[in-house]
Length: 291
Image 1 (tube, rainbow, N blue to C red):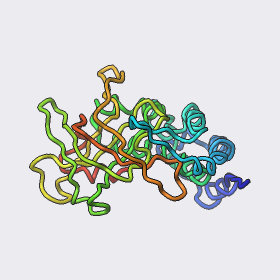
Image 2: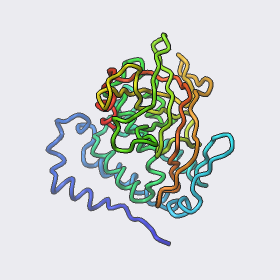
Image 3: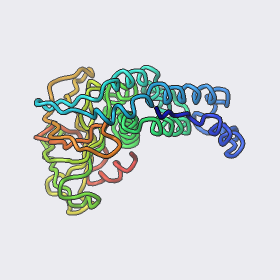
Image 4: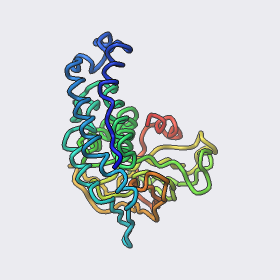
């Protein structure tokens, strides 16, 4: 059976002898991550990739994800336990700010961890990978209220995240987006439209999924200059962080991408789902590209 050996020693050689890791000790996070800490973190990341992620790579691709009649999607056998091991280890928040529950270590370590996990099992690694991208966008462009509402749960791995760009009529030409955002008069928007090829769009690994959705507010300029970004949770979130009712977001079908059948690549339908604007109106691409 094919295996995977994380190149921990090679990575340490590059950090220590080629890139001069210790010369960057004055940068944020590096003071808390001397080389002995880096060695320990990478050793554990390698073990996670080799022993937890890699054994599920082939079996996950053979089984794939399943969409049920009620729109729920279940991941392959073993994925939930593997994700829980990843979540419990605090890996999603490795480089996230401590103010929201992260460890505040250098992004360098998260990038290396991502390489190990993606090499071992890309389909599984994509679930937290999309979450980390959504975290970055909310950190960069979200309001204080949005950060306090969403980031602690996402950084803890209890909620996951996605990015929703592509639509049936437009792939790379995002200026053709038709998904609509209609103000509801209470500071929120009703989001309606269809997105396709949405990685990790629906699954059973987390209790909530925080979708970052590109849409066009009524009256916005044509083309890419009229696109805004919205936070649209699968389940509505109360003021105290508790989960409310479903939010008009559903998975219409699953796509089957070669080599990553274990990741739920979804057609996502938004039927008047409640969303909140992140960043400025008509600056959605600017906010999304942080991911």
